[in-house]
Image (cartoon, rainbow, N blue to C red; front, top):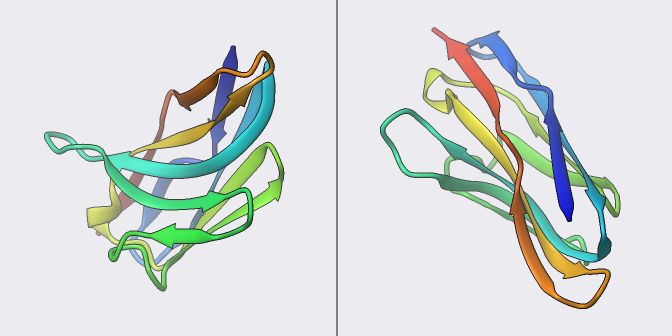
Length: 119
């Protein structure tokens, strides 16, 4: 019903940058919010940043000042990550919620993209 396709993960040295993108497709009437979460090995999945349909953003404390989330269009969200640290290493998941074509609410997750930061 809704597909979220992520791209942009990879291996980078500490202090480097990566840009993640997520594109939504499917039977979508509206997308109310899109965002990124991350999950490091042995840890829970945590919020990184979100942006709603009005453009309001929200960031985890660990992301503030280094990570910027933006929506290129109504179905695409990007996350620019600068000054990356080894502790940013995790699988990053795109998340989106809104309304399907027939009116039901939804929340979907992408498959995840690996980000690895070497020291």
